[in-house]
Length: 532
Image (cartoon, rainbow, N blue to C red; front, side):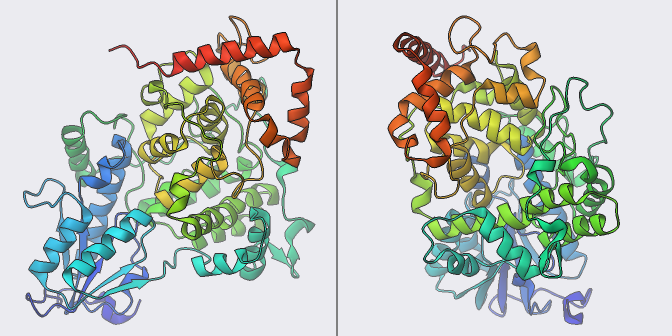
């Protein structure tokens, strides 16, 4: 930033009627290098931030998620004030709180009377519409700027997508790697190949993961403790607990978390990125997505740190490529899908799934060991790694036939890193195949044997993943065959599902009837509300 941006005590708030720009900063835009601050004049401009109940209640947000956003916002506001900038900040418990972003912004525009509004483009369609509505109602111009946090713009993705019959991550990923020179050597991919999945994605084996590196934990300071007390009082009936809260809430903490991942977990990340183990939440994953989605960390600096670790010989190429693909590839891909397909994308339900989300998703009270572990961990920490999300909680919902919007709302509510632009396509497209294959080339359908192969959950479970019917039948396996039979005509047209669909022919009519009966019985049981 230029020198004028670092002016300190000389800055004084402009009186009403003389304010030039009201610079809007949302809870997932906590970046002092944000485009919204380009040209910021501490003597004539003011930063606007607001905590409003709507952002915690439009979905039934879990306590960990609410606390992370509020604490990070309050810390960010303090960092701006320390630079001498004026911050007009509305707290959740302020008596004059308008309750929604649009209402609060409209009220503050009337009070502060800025000449214009400035903001970096929001990550959510809903929020963008509310900001535009408030600006239009006030008659103030809104300067909407690109989000520089990403490697690409939505316009870049739209240009990439134009004329293509299918959108696939691999081509977008290669394009971005080449354009940005990441993991490239002499114009070719480092190591002679783009993808190292064959070297990654192993299980821990019977011996288990052994000694694991620690989670990066940040003890709550006074600001965070105040937020936690507020959340426990104001949202006492919301899911989860704050007992384990230790997420990064400042940029300094986020940088320490990045350093910890690079030093301690990245070398084995690729090898065990898909592995699960009972009672082990953190494993070799980065735990950086919440910091990145709040913009406490930049995507470029995270990717650069991982690439530097490989070039220094600290981490193998396979691990680094697998990690980089999650950020440079998948994260950019889902953002492009979201913004080029909204708002219609939010309602997609290609498989006509209509089952309700089971109540035990909010409690973890289920006999299925893998689901119980993933759900209780999620409610305790606001976190689960990508395979727990895709191939446990997501897989079960897909096979059961849960209405995809209910699944989306649950993911948006319970995970600390959930913001809609990244969460919705991952859930509706990747996990639930609700978009009919726009994002993913096939439904990620599997029996309980996948979970058995990648974890130790089945060892302590009363269900047998090899059984589709009977008292010990694994619900994942029962519902897998039921899913294939329900959607056989559609899936038979998908080349990547052909082998799985052919396996249906091995089932006798009697076996099909038993599977159907057991699946229907399980669906009825799963849809029943929990006893008080």
